[in-house]
Image 1: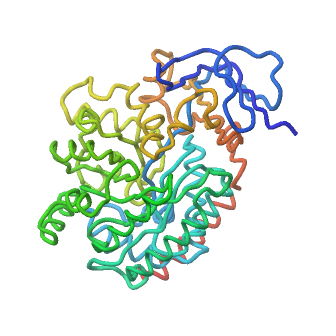
Image 2 (image 1 turned 135 degrees about the vertical axis):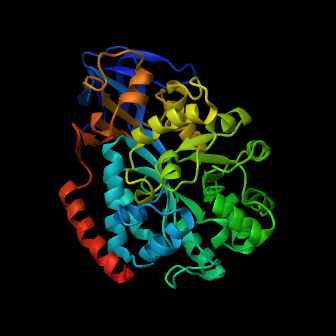
Length: 443
């Protein structure tokens, strides 16, 4: 059976260096893009109809928590630190491998159907193999890693680790999963945030990640004012300064949020090459504030986009984050030209890929890159009558408009239906396991 694929008749939003928008076909051979544009009457292999649709690179979510998908609606209307200590940490500590697998499948199914093709995920402390197994079977591209937590107040017994144990388990997971699934999966060391990690853990994590090409360090930084205050009281300096001093910096480091970063800190982050992921909806829901994305980009920081987790967002929908990012940038600066639609789209495509060190493989439609692409309807009443395609995509498009999703040349969503996961089984398992987790957590 041929593995060729022919996506015919769409509007190709390439996100290539020239940001070309073309009419024509997209052709795939051996999991890679073999032609972008032009027409093919007799192309080999499977054909997908893209007439009346946009065809664009698969969307990248550079900060998510698959382990929290089961907790949607269980931790609403709380600020960050109480949200963690009173709800999220007890719930995560109550996970077993079966519930974590159900959580990961739920989050993956939601994101695949919305056009997400690559993720950077942070797990919980235990049972991380279950997350990788779910990612492998779903067809998703991404990096993940177990959360690392060897310090801090308010940690449930099930989450607190020894420094040595956390590092040893993380190294073993990296050996098992980095480069797995024909290179679709990668490892990201995940020291949760500076208040839950010792200096030794952070230093040794940074050293270990630097030893293996493509391995990332993934953490949280400067998310909430109360968190920043607690860091200053504990360390006598801000989190970014301490992380930099301990070696957690550079192009292999992705830090989520950055809401509280000052301009001078942005310049230092940019100089180091450290990446920042913007999570607009989660920042609003936890009352963390609005990250200054324009200032970050002007400073030279590579900025990605992510939904964060279901209990601090309630959606894992990249289209909500795209629209929110574009609108909030305007509100933050009182400038309607801040983060125009075409630039916002970069955060979820080529810049998101760059944040993860994958821009040589994904993030744009260019011959030779891996075939990660989505076909999105443009004929909805909420999108009509037309206009600039980037504006249609960023300001008007919804997850339900995603028609086809292709990852590494494999069709994982076709005509709005999952092909790699069973939707009804995912839902049944999620409902069952959520009840069990809540009962074990005593909430």
